[in-house]
Every structure is written in C-alpha cells, then in structure tokens.
Image (tube, rainbow, N blue to C red; front, side, top):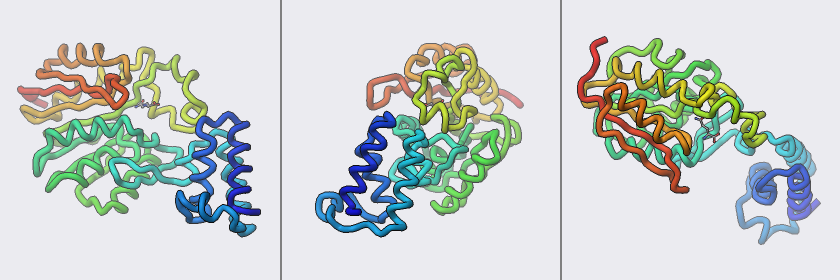
Length: 282
Ligand code: GLN
C-alpha cells in the first residue's frame, strides 16, 4: 500500500471513531512508524510502505480509535521545548502548564530550591531546572509509577539536581524552598464524566480529581506550604479557568501577600501566585 493510501485509511478510521483531529493524528502516527517528516505525505505519497510498518500503523490507529491519547502511543510529549516521556501513569503535559513554568521563571534566581508537588512526569520541575543556573529541586507524587517516569525524564535530560520523593504532598519533604509550585488535580469530581474520552478513560484519575469543588488540594497546599517556604518564598499554583477567585481567597486567608492571577493563551485564569513574607515555624 502507498504511504498516502495508508494515511487516508488511517484518517477515515479515526474520523469515524470521532477523534477530533483525525487528519493530524493519522499523519503523526504514520510519521512515527515510518520515521518520516511532515513533507513526506506531499512529496513521497506514492512510495510503498513495508508490510511490517503497515501492520504497526494499523494497530496504532486501532488503539487511537479507542481514544488512547496520541502521546501515550508515541510515548512522548513536547513541553517547554523539551521532550518528556509519558505513559498512562502521568498526566500528559499541557501547553497551559507552560504559563505556570513561565511565571515561575520570572522569579527564579540562581541557586534557588524548588519544590514541585504532584510532579507527575516531572515536566514542571525539570524544565525549571533546565532553564536556570545552579537551582535544585524536589518533586513529590503519591504514585510510584509516576515517579518512575519523572526519574527517567530527569536522566534523559541530564538534570542531576532533581530528587523525586514518593508521598502525599509534603510528607517526606524536608527543608525549606524559595519556590513551591504545583499543578495539582483540580477538576471537580462531578465534572470528570464530562471530560473528553482521551482524558476521562486514559489519563490517571488521581491526577485530575480535585474533590467535590475541585479545591481540595489548594486548601491543603496553601496551609501546609507555610512550613516549607523560606521567608519571602513564593507559591505558584496552576488553576482551572473558573478557580481564580476562590484560590486567591484561600491564599489570602492563609496569610500570603502580593497575590496575582495570570491568564493563559486563551485569556483564561490559569496561574495564581502568592508570597509568604513571614515563614511559619515548623
Ligand atoms: N488541565 C487538565 C485538563 O484539562 C487538568 C489538570 C489538573 O487537574 N491538574 O484535564
């Protein structure tokens, strides 16, 4: 079968399975299997595809039609210009989360210590370390399987100043940090059934479910972070589009100052940041 015919067949199958970006995903999977690039469809569409590759492609299309996310099939996602390994145990890094990383980077100085809670693939902590000098960090996650991926990512990126610790938020964390950052689970429990099949069925529920009002993790983080921030330390949180007001109130209540809310590329509230001027004694 030719490269183009195979692509067309893949596209049709994804389309009829209701995959949103059928044409794009059919092309990216074919490029993944054949080690080809964007132009090959246009320039070399008439080339035959080896039987083994055709078979592999058809099986990937089959799995994508079952709504398994593209990134879980290729095993990778780009984030902050870096390539991160992903699997079904970690949330796939989102472009929205780059806003969180960029906000932290504005405040990051050489040698800072960073704590990343609910680290998942490690994409937040590792990109902060990659784009800074002499900083070090700890990433925590409840899930061992997620930490395996985070450690592999650290190794692949050559980030030696990252330590990954299993635990429920701060348990197992010692010392104080200039920066605490988190993209915790924040989807209200009863919204989960309305998410896209790719997210709802194939991404880890523990990375998404933020409790009845979606704010469970922010309540705990805002309170418990005070024993782990240096005086003048800052807390950065990714939030859902409608949580800016509520998370700002929570930080105010806990004594954080200079609280700001930043929007994502779609103009929606995405990051809340606050400073703790007087560190709490632990
Ligand atoms: N933004 C993610 C989504 O759209 C949710 C991430 C989270 O709960 N931290 O599914």
